[in-house]
Image (cartoon, rainbow, N blue to C red):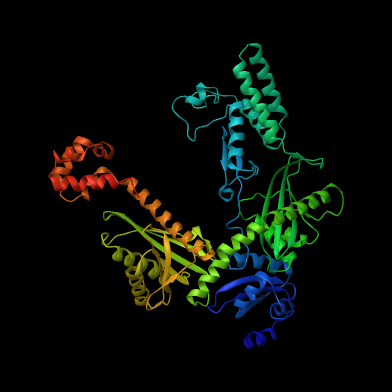
Length: 591
């Protein structure tokens, strides 16, 4: 702390960014300030609560970067957060993304449901966001039914089924007037912008025609389409008398949490809303402004206009996003901000109890585990499990929990290359490969390794870690006769630590064990599904090249061979070989 005080004395009161570090030199928080000295000093005086107190307890050092303006510090802050992914900065990596509908910019366009907006070269023909992928697909199906656009990714040599059911004009074999295609595009774009009058009129006309022909079943289908448009696609109308695409944000703060609500207004209607609640660490205005700026990095199209509360720094957002940002103080737009604020309050009040329970079952349980194991910190846990079938199709899986929650982008799969009949050899191979790579590539090492096995596997992994010159605690999860988690194996010499079956820690350990087991089994099934009958016969003792060739010629598929009884197999194979093959086939589709 003396070092921090000495450094604080040298910090200037100028705009810039600061980077907080823990005892391992890892950056755990990035922030910005108009006056660096004042802001940094505030962390080390007075008392703090919640996540801020937890952050301060881990800070042992800091760095800072002085810049020329607050705008520069804001841009630098966003970039540093992306680069370092600090533990205490809230990012949108786990946040919800929404589907959009794309009308492709081709000679004969297609309608697609897309999510990866950053990969689209032309974003001017993207419409949305939609509440979910089902709503987006239903809308695409509706438009495809009403307007016979191209459905094929590449042109076929002759008309396909869509042509014969009237949902394509057969562009692969027929010459279609450009004006016909242009009119369809115009109608579709109007619809996607929120004007449903053209399609509604078209459906009504067709419905009356079918009704007059006494084709009541067809008329009923068209009536259902009308109902879908009126109930599902007609959103809440707002009083703004224009069709400008705009987003607006509201917020609410209580009990150490910040609740944010975003509303997407398209064609004068509220198309969808987005909600997010997270712990408050920085000043409210800093957190909210940063959140809004980061929001549009996560597959969201920028609107033509952004409406924000008074607390937000609109100048910073305008310079960062390059769109108009307004803070309404009266009128319809101000009422919309108030509505978003109210919704943020309702969301926090409704979800606070669930948030607290989730915190107890993740972050608090993780802290309890840290205390039991006497670790200085427990930010990252890596867990391993193996799976094989009689020594074949052998794989291992690794899952990662960061700050009490699964970090799915860090999960890894391993194909075993060595002795796959030996569980210990499998664990030795996969952990050596993993942590040699961690050292070689400078990856973040875990604070704890958990193996889904007993004492033998713990010793194997500990030997691997020691051979690499690393210092990482290795523990195991013991199972009872019912294959359920029963206790924790830790320390040296190894002790069996009983865990209360009703505790959050037990739930946490069980969840991690289930996660690594399911991830590994899923990968094992993927590998097995790719295995042919030929590869299976290669692994059965007693079947050589001649017998394999005969079996392949006669039965061809795994399914046909599995239908044989043990007596039928013994009639074509020696008893011992038949038993081996029968047992292998019976276990082939099981876990």
